[in-house]
Amino acid sequence: MSDQPPRPATNENNLLISAYTAHPESPLLAISRRISDSGCNLIEARLATIGADVSVLALAQGPWDAVAKLEAMLTRLEREDGLRLTWYRTGTKALQSELLPYVIEVVAADKPGILFQLADFFDRQGISVENLQSMRYRAMQTGAEMFSAQITVGIPSSMHIAALRDDFLEFCDHLNLDAIMDPMKF
Image (cartoon, rainbow, N blue to C red; front, side, top):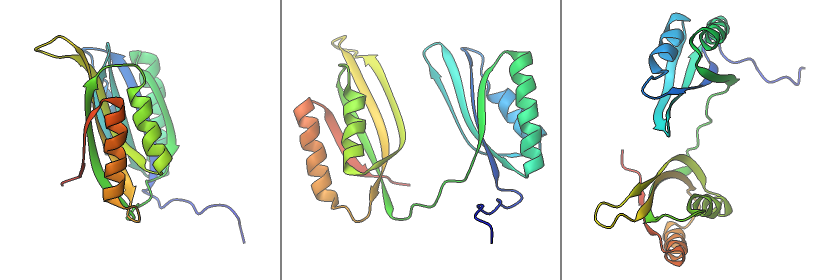
């Protein structure tokens, strides 16, 4: 009997791709075209303009030979088009039916370390951060530098939600953060 993990099903080979280029160019068309041309399927994608760059994070899935073909295409794309690319093979995300999805929204006067303190709070509680978007902006009326974040977390179903909410809001009050914590609505 072998101790090796079972090989994935034929069409369950995954490649996680990160692509970056200077704004206003976007790597989305080039990446999605290569995924399609290789015989893979684009399972999930995220695009964001951050600073002076546009980034695309894409998860491609397909048979092992199609993923290998995609890797070769990405090597050529990086060399010929000057995109900054990284990629690696990954697995599929395990089902987490014991986690309850909640959305956290935070707004505050900007100061260093807010995002770290939020991430640290959730980590100490054993809560996984599933998605996060944060930004800094200038308030229209006052011109004050502001921080805003929207965080999707997975809360273990065994956790007492009301107690967690109280702890989180107390934590935010201590840091002078305006925050809400609501169940995700689909």
